[in-house]
Amino acid sequence: MSTLRKKLAAFFRPSVLPAKTRVLMENEGLVFAEEKVRITVVYHRLKAPGRNIRHKRETVWGSLAISKERLVGYAFKKRIIHLPFRSEETRSVKFSCVNQKVLVIAFDPAVFNPKQSGSMEIRYHFSRALEAYEIIRDLIG
Image 1 (tube, rainbow, N blue to C red):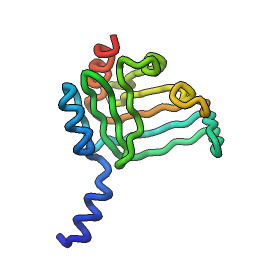
Image 2: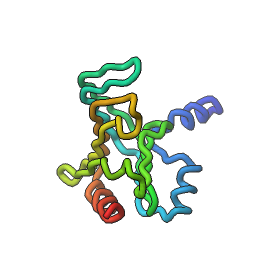
Image 3: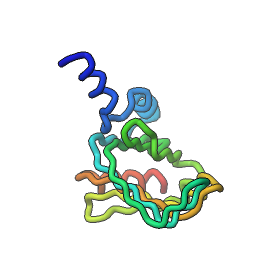
């Protein structure tokens, strides 16, 4: 494989948890990790500075990791969710599992950024969704 091809493959590797994040999560007691996951992000009546989205659905690939302290999710190389379990914001997030194969994380973005409003859902499609949901439920209490 050529050097350029290797660099492009490393840059566009959408489904891997970044190495620094994996080390951090392992130090906190990594409980669950899943890579190469299809993610659907759904926006409902989202208002943010410069954005007004009535309804939009995006599909991306990424990863999800759960430690004893936090939940972290990445889409491509961008962190899309970071929830410390002991924070006040986490209490307003709703977790559910659909058909044992889709982990749903639903929230109002205004909780994290007062300049935004509406609702968002991040849906992780993978076979271990029920297991991840039960771990989250146990850690949140």
